Length: 271
Image 1: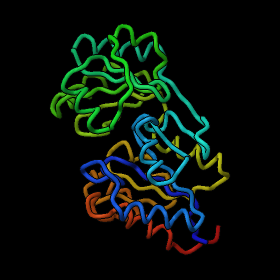
Image 2: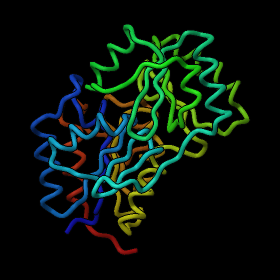
Image 3: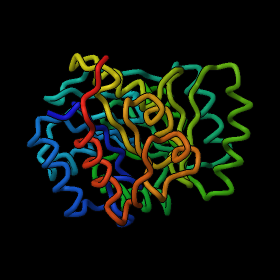
Image 4: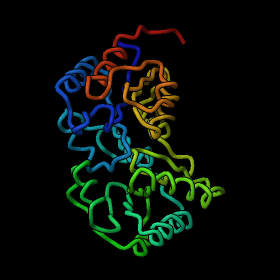
C-alpha cells in the first residue's frame, strides 16, 4: 500500500484543463488512486455546488475542501468544518465593493450570491457552471453569514483592490488571497486551504506525511507547504513551484495525473 493515504487536488488550473474540463488521463489517475485505497480530496476555492459535478464524474463522494478551506465536507459530504467572516470585517469589504461598484460574490456554505448581473457574472457562470444563485445588493449581503467574499475585476483593478483592501483590513486578521488573475478573495482570519486539508486529515486520523497535495496558484501555497508530499503544475505561479517537492507538467498536459502517479509510487518511510 502506498505511503500516501490522502491526495488533495486543486481544480482550476491544476486538475482541470484550460477549458475547465477533466481529461481522460486525470480520470484514470484518480481511479487508480481509489483502486489502491487512497482517498482523493478535491480542494478548491469554488463553492461546493460547483465542485460536486467533478466529484460525481470521478465517482467521489468526498472529502471536499471548498471556499479555500472555509467550508469542508467529509467522506459522505457531511460538514466537518465551517468558518465565517466576522460581521464587522464583512461589512468593510461589502462597503468597499458598493462604493467602487465591484462585482462581488458572497459564499455562505454551499450557496453563492451575486451583487449584480452583467459581464463578470456571465464569465463566472461560464467558468464554474453555476446555475443557481440569487442577485442581491451588497447592502443586503450584510445580513448574510459570509463564508467568504470574492471580488471579480480585470487584472490591473484586482491588484489595486488588493493594495487598498490590504490597508483597510491590515489589523483585522482577514486572509486576503489572489485565487485567479481576476479574483481576490476575503477569508475568515486564519483560513486557507491547509486548514481545510488538516480538518480532513484529522477526521480521517491521518498524519501529515500521509497527505499529498498539488496546486497552481497563490491560494494553494499554504496547502502545498503543509502536505507531506507536494506538487505544482508547470503553469503554476512561481511561488507555488518553488515550494513544491515536485513540479509536473501543465494542467493541459496531464500534470495532475503525473503527480498522482508519483504520490502512489512513493516508498513508505519510518516515522
